[in-house]
Image (cartoon, rainbow, N blue to C red; front, side):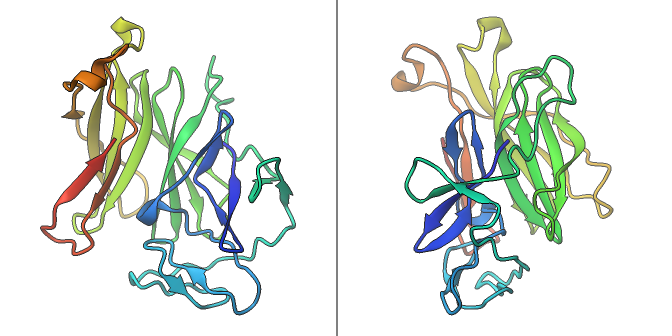
Amino acid sequence: VALAALSWMGQSVPLQGQVQGGLSTTHRDLLSPVVGVGAEGVPEYCYKCWDPCPCPDLLPTCCGTTARVEALGTEGWTNTTTAGVEDYDGNPILTAADDLAEWLLGDPAVVVIGDTIHLWGNEVFHGIIHYTAPLDDPFAFTKLETSVHMPGSVRAFAVHDEAKGSIVLYYEQYELRTLEQSSKLVWIESAVPSDGSGWSWSRPTVALEPELDWEMVGTSRVGNAFVYQDSSGGDAPWHLYY
């Protein structure tokens, strides 16, 4: 897992990750709170809803969340051949080197709970791994636990249900017997432990299976979930894009 920054209206905004040569961007409420601080007086943006937050180093967002950030500037970042995109000099920030026979760690999903950043990324043989880092040191991730042990579990998307105090983890589960030619979207849920450890995940529940004609052209797959709730919260409907 590597980090890149995209120039957004004259500022550097870190993306969720650059994996296997492609940018995997975050969106709305799952955007990392580590936002770039531009020139003095230039409005920053709420990492939850992108509304302007005109403050130099503390972001009291319109969503009622605050996050301390440090200026990124140009130090520690290198321009790429893609206009407006910079790579972090400390890349990779995470690798799969700790697990036997693993060669890939990718498709990160990120949420912030209190003063901790939670990141889920998938490997090839070891499922979906859960990492954490302090909010004031957002590149210092350590392995916390394995949330999904099943091989072929990929492309996680994490939703923090603040009302329930839980994390719902959506992911694509390949059918290994078909040599990854078919998949389903499933989800698991765990209460957020008060001490940060002792996560207890539910059994997988199928959220979506391929059934439309275009979902079964060549392969029979559904994946890459993006889930959000209407801003009114409470009993407001949830929406899934895939």
